[in-house]
Image 1 (tube, rainbow, N blue to C red):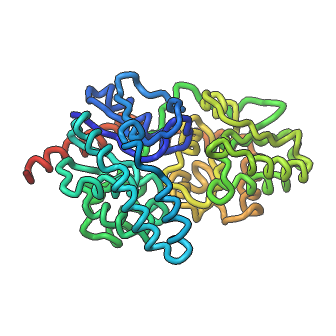
Image 2: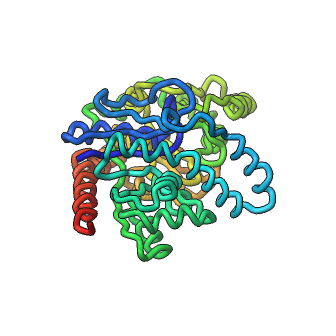
Amino acid sequence: MRILLARIAALNGRNGGMEHVEARMANAMIKRGHKVGVLSYDTHDGSPYYSIDSSVRMLNLNNFVESTKHSLALKCIREVVRPFSRRKFLYWKNRWRYSYFSGAIRTVLDKFRPDVIVSFDAESSAVFFGTCPELKIPLITMFHFSVDEAVNWADAQEIEALKKSDCVQVLLKDDLVKLKKRLPQVQVVCIPNVVPEYSVMADLGKKKTTYTIIDVARLTKNQKRPYLLIEAFSRLAEKYPEWRVQFWGSEPDGNTVYTRELQKLIESKNLGDKVTLCGNTNDVLSKYINADIIVLPSAYEGFPLALSEGMSAGLPGVGFRKCMGVNEIIEDGRTGYLVGDGAEELGEGLKKLMENQRLRVKMGKAAHQAMKRYEPERIWLAWETLLNDMVKGKQWRE
């Protein structure tokens, strides 16, 4: 089977969850004997942050677009139309994208000749259907976030793309129900993300001079909200002097403005020797197994990869009860704690684990066992079955 994994956005150097899923899926399908292409739109030189098998065919739309077409038109649409009507802006933005990418999309499809397309977001699906109205290749649209966040519900083209998709894949059971209510005519399937099975685990029973709370995520103020962990820990640091906090991750696109803001917050709380902004790492497993608790203070998630990976490595998790994704990964009181939104509530959840090593050990073991339901073989088999079904289904219709 020839599988095209497509997201019409930058891939090179990006270290987010969506890029991680894309790399894992490409590598897994290669190992299962399929031909895989990865479609991106990179305007700068570079390479993917996450390792992708050398036999995967990398297809950059930027290499196929006509150089005479320029983004000035989009800038004019954004500056002139958007202030007056967001709906009209989205309409004309998409019309520009369809025109801009039309020849390039067709060239890629002719060159790679996929049996099935896996589009990583509704926006990319809209481009496929906008540039190829009579598309004969089955297309699956993935949801990386919850139903509320994964689709711009003000954009008629994205909604239409979901209706035209042969199938829409969501990560959570709640999202399957929500999407069926919104678009009952859409075929929806729930396949969660893969969580690695690690051969080593955190040794939570070990006596140490310092213990570590870890947060592995991009540094974004409105979604990941690392400031809430800093605020929560500031309430506990004096009583628990042996504890430290490590943030692993960076701001998107090489920005540092929010990083500096977080550093100022750390210093204002006199936590400079206890809380560290560590930046990115290529060896995240070593961070998990040397930590004691994993925290994700996000406002919203799809399927929280780092949280589930940390729990697979034997760490109890703490997150907010109202956060979709987090509340499906953490079983409150068994594999960690789900708390009310806010720094004070987060601190209460942390305190229960910080002051009780036996509880950390118990919950860490339970977390490790719970993550086995997302083992790679089970998830990739589900994907492979879906892809085969979509290809066969398209052939039947023809």
